[in-house]
Image 1: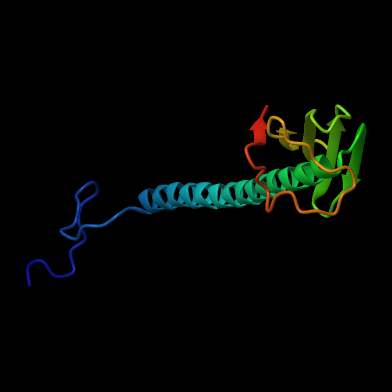
Image 2: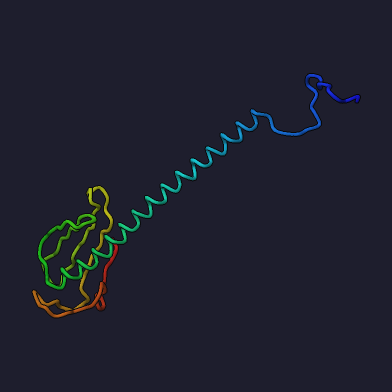
Length: 147
């Protein structure tokens, strides 16, 4: 019964190991900061995915609309509002000229795509014709060029 009921002297550690309350509080604080950083990165990744999808949509729609406008021989400038933003264009007015397209975000503050559509050399699009000159977004021998 020699060790029973005795209180260890001040500054002497007991045989049982463990963490102090201060160590646990500091560890939990560091863990919380890490969790908040991960949550912030998830939110940023979601916003970038939304923006990437919008850029892809704007680019595809700009190429499609550019092909259609070149096919009918559009002249001058124009714009149209879509469900996701704005499409703007400017043409040289010739069926052998080029067409510049811009896809803008709905607030108009962000350019999603800026491209130039041109016909292949020596190829004339019908003015107001109903013939299908090409299918999809690709021009035979021509295409879209990033600027």
